[in-house]
Image (cartoon, rainbow, N blue to C red; front, top):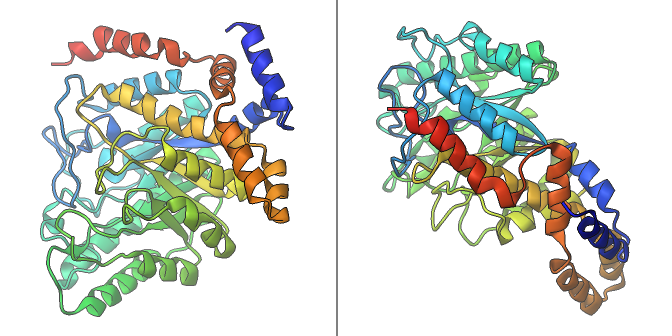
Length: 418
């Protein structure tokens, strides 16, 4: 880019006491955990015709070129990491193991089925995160898993969860960075249940059994993911926000806050300062709900700006694990990755560029006018010039070249998948 453009931007931010070079350096330290399931529409590789079913999750669209196997998935992921600046991790679901065409039961999937992923991550010097797959299975067809009234079904999913944690621990040990293993279950009812407490008692006890084995925190860390409602669970979700807040606090686990798992009028950003008071660490799933938990591609909108500002303002970004969780098959899937990942990073960069010290001073003085005026002024500062500089330093394409880059990959690689 024209050096004068960045120089001018740097000078404008400096007037407010902000060092753009330090902001870029701070952003380079924040890893983003990419979600493997965007590449293949949450299908997994348990069978040749595997596809998403159940769990109140839907992926719309059938844009050509989705990855059909692990080789193609890894190629797409490499492409994503080539066009997204900064440091990335990869989050895997249990159904994305290497099963060699064998029908391995979900309760029997083990670390050896992810040896290839560990080697792949080692080559790229990146960490792996993990998720149990409590959906797309006959034992989840009626909408209940760990809270199921049938003990045999509960035991099946408890064992699945145990294996998930073993796999995550093996990943963390091999890669030298703890794997964040997240537990989300679809359990809930479309209409009004009577025994709400009973389901939650069973979920609590199942989680306790599932997490009984201790692993070093240097290898893996547990998170539990809350939800307000979903398709087929509009009236009742067993793993509510209150349930998991209590469970995580009492069991020394992380809470996972997903941006799509709350009422549309609720702000995740507003929850952070409260959560940080009582938790050492936090897992965020960054998504974009449109009227419901629809997992749209993340954009650099007000929700993301508010979230990332609060992350930086609280001074706890080092204690926050940021993972993406969206899936869109109506567009090029690599392009969707690029838009969503870069949107989160832009939000973080804007937050690092905020004149925090001046704003906090006005806050403490009770000077509401000056605080609001400075926030408004900051909106028109040349963020784009600093973002372009960050992309240049990271060796990735700037926004101006992103469309041609992604469509070139589609033409040369994805369009040849039949």
